[in-house]
Length: 311
Ligand SMILES: Nc1nc2c(ncn2[C@@H]2O[C@H](COP(=O)(O)OP(=O)(O)OP(=O)(O)O)[C@@H](O)[C@H]2O)c(=O)[nH]1
Ligand SMILES: [Mg+2]
Image 1 (tube, protein in one colour):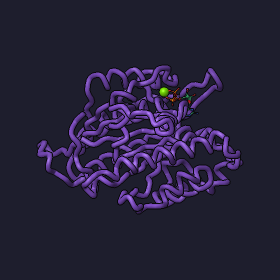
Image 2 (tube, helix red, strand yellow):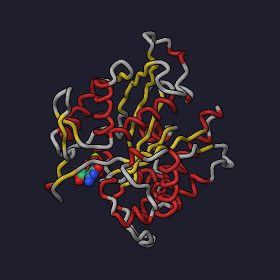
Image 3 (cartoon, rainbow, N blue to C red):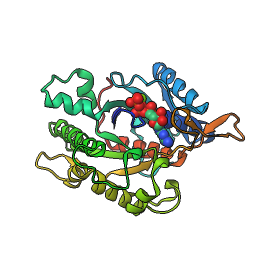
Image 4 (cartoon, rainbow, N blue to C red):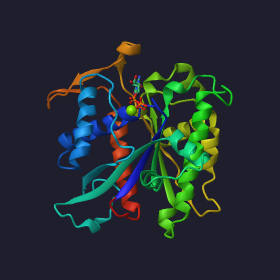
């Protein structure tokens, strides 16, 4: 069992993100059933199904998943040899599948920094979350204006400070691990609401043309570096100091761009859907390939992590 921590600000698209992650898993489970399987515990499925249902009906989720205190557990299974780098067949699950068990929890970045600044006692759930080696910060594209210098109190600057502070704290938790492999952090950045990015912002960031699904790994990584340096300088500084005195290393971040097609505006903002031929039913118009790539990365990374006991 490995654990992943999703970090976001309020309103940054956390609930939609987990809904789309589940939507992608459902689709992979149907379209690629001979290559991919997933399984989750009943309570997790119940919560995710509610969000999935809303998104599938074209609405943004009205309720949150309750995963701040209780992680959502998933088991992914991949056909052996399907994913390069996923080569540890020690599970001996048989029938040709490698499995990966992942616990997802979520935190608002502000919560962590506030608790630290007030010397609050970290409760068990918070401590468990802070021990995750895979960390998934969500960056809300709708807060990125073409003019990045909004001053130290602008929402983006505050987001940067809390994110850098949270990552620093995660690093401190890892630093106490005796196992070298356990002293490594894997950041996977998800830029949410990329459909809201203004043309000018894209131009300023020198973003590649076309949809994110078409960007190659180098282009997306270069864009990620520019995005951090431009809007999140403290976070960039934390990530670029790869080797620290504490012995914690931070892997170069991977980047995923979440995009949903919407229609209407304001309170009436709806998610566009397309019919799912030949399976039937409807699915949201979203960046499925980004989610598929994220799921594969999660599988690959968690196969490399030292196992932690189930919570
Ligand atoms: N255009 C666009 N809007 C989005 C997208 N994802 C989320 N939103 C908007 O952001 C709002 C908040 O999304 P949620 O997924 O509920 O975000 P959250 O972080 O869970 O929010 P709270 O739980 O309220 O803190 C939605 O109601 C949408 O209006 C996206 O991909 N594109
Ligand atoms: Mg939410």
